[in-house]
Amino acid sequence: MTTPAARKPIMTLYSGTMDSYSHRTRIVLHEKDIECQIVEVDLNKKPRELGELNPYNQVPAMVDRDLVLYESNIINEYLDERLPHPPLMPVDPVSRARARLMLVRFDRDWYSLIPEITGGDKRSATRARHALRDGITVISPIFKEQAFAMGEEFSLVDCSLAPLLWRLDHWGIELPRQAKPVLEYAERIFTRKSFKLSLTEAERALRSPSR
Image (cartoon, rainbow, N blue to C red; front, top):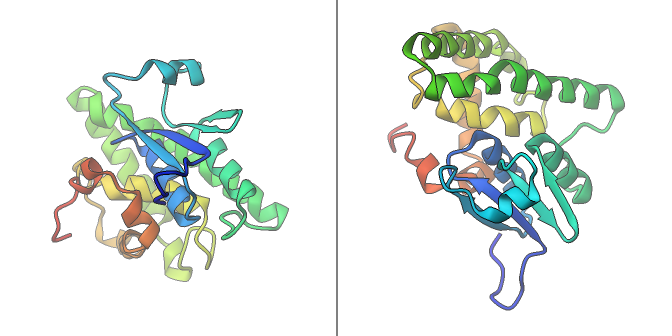
């Protein structure tokens, strides 16, 4: 990911330092070892150019030559197709469709809870924490039978799930005993080189070193 001083990366990613959507794109960048300039954005003081690039003035936003992309799932699929090795989406159409459905469900069912968890009133935050806890617990049996969300290969689905799992402790969410398979899966993900490199200093501080 590091580049010589005389060589400027052709890609630039505007990324929130604590933003879960940005985090999953950073995982993709490091999984594929893509040279990219990462501009850390303070969401309370966004740079003017972000609003010029993304009409929604949100992170992540990526610039690749004359192309500007926003929405992390779109960025991640673009990166996977533009630099296809290692592939992070299944090859066959049926499995690709299933992966996309999982990504949509993560966004609608779980990522949509983040504003309530982090900024809602006490009652709505508690309700959102319980919904996320229960949702993750329900998918836990998947990881009794396979190493990753889509099977035996790491994919964009894992890139999307990992930021949520990393933040559970910080959000005060404790998974029940029956979720042991997903907790073991999480630890496998957290030891991947790409995941470790994807963390900002602020994100690294979300979990104690002993964890």
